[in-house]
Image (cartoon, each protein chain N blue to C red):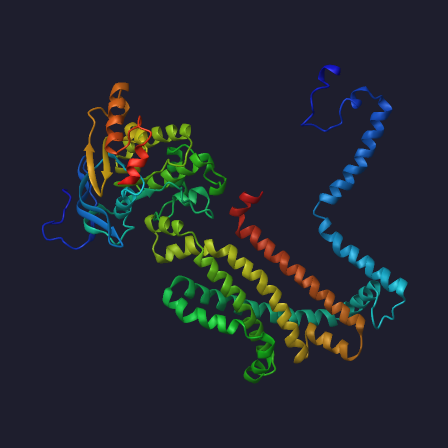
Length: 266
Length: 294
């Protein structure tokens, strides 16, 4: 069954509409038209049109304060003040930079929060997928940073989301743990093929993970790039070229020590 | 030895090289004295030191009475107080007083905790609730509870009701203030996460807000238990025919200092028991937090 998209011509008022569940591969899962957001009269984002397809991992790059998290929150339904038309599936999940596990619930119960009719066996299976089934009965406060993020991913994937929203989920992990988490995320996305929006300011993370890379700048999407090679097949020279291009788009010149000054000046 | 003389031992027992060269006898002497010291140190560091303070106090008390030849009407000795307590237990006086008082405290606590928690939730979870309830609570909070006793007697008679309600009244405030603060201090990021995970308002309250407010609620409970005993005794001393306060006021009239001391002793033990109860509740309900303390 095709996704029922709302006729967008007459939709001026802000709305977040929930689509009917159905999941053919490669189908448009998220449709954004004319999305904008202002805070106290200051326009952060405006005129954003964006479609996300089933199974694709899209990285959203931007500097601090560029509005990338704002867009993600809108897709999560956490921002009632947005303007434009945003259509997202009901089955969506989110993982934040801080794991946000409830400290008073054991790990497996955390995984099951908000999942109706789920059993401990479901939770264990989800934890097994992220490799921490052994920690199912631990209190979140005793987990390492990597383990906590794995639990957060288990909590997201147990919902079998059609849209997965990741808000710098690996931002507070050490470099080695982050690499392991990248491999895990790729595997999970391959298996569950949700449309994934990964918000990050880490160019290397985007290059390592994303099928498609967006750069957000000056209130809009300034780059929507789909590299020819899938993430795993990207070779050294390609990575270097891609990385340089993204940095340029972000207004960062790694060879120029005064880049920062220019940025803050405008 | 000279080869390592330039080095400083920064980690280790500090026993140094003499242990290596000293003979067998020296070593046994050292280990024996260390053994006795270890026992002392172990006792010093163990949880039993908790009882050390009261025991020392008790010893000083007995000593003062014995040396000072104080008349027992002014200051009965600990041994006299203990024998009085035994006597009061044997004829059932103490037990009856304790049961009557406990009943009032438990009923008052249950009532006060229920009302205080309900008000705190209403005020903590809704802005309208806060506007309606919070100012009233702070107005009532500052009224001296004991000044309200005559009013409570006029309203509820001289029976059990007045005492139970007075305790409930006094208990409401520490429960309210702490639980309200607990509800308001729940990490908003966790509430947001709960919402995204599909929890409705009821689910958020049950899984996120109530457990998040629990530590603060228990602080309130600790205060409430202490206050309930204070209020009870005051209420019982003014108007009662049973209970610990009644026993105390009776003893006062008959100049039975030893009985008064027993009453005071029982209060202190009840305070201790209240603390133990809250501790047990905390250990059970806040097990997730113990992982930080170890």
